[in-house]
Image (cartoon, rainbow, N blue to C red; front, top):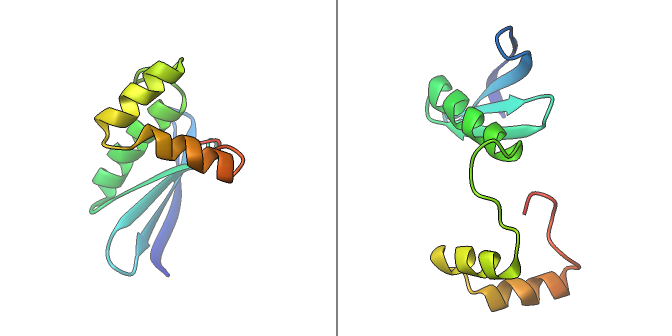
Length: 99
């Protein structure tokens, strides 16, 4: 349940961002054109996190994972068993688009 919601057009970026404060005091920021959302303990934290999330979504930051070997290396660095990912993909017919 939200305690406050507002939509703001950012004239600098042309984006519409919705800010919602949850009952536990956290802020959720959503970039309406992309559907990307993030959160933070303050409004500014939520907006900063949203900027990073949108940039990742658009491929403006971060490194591309183009091969299975690249993917395996990244998963191992994150402490995720690549074999579990393969098994989960086979059990669930692939991964969602955000993966």
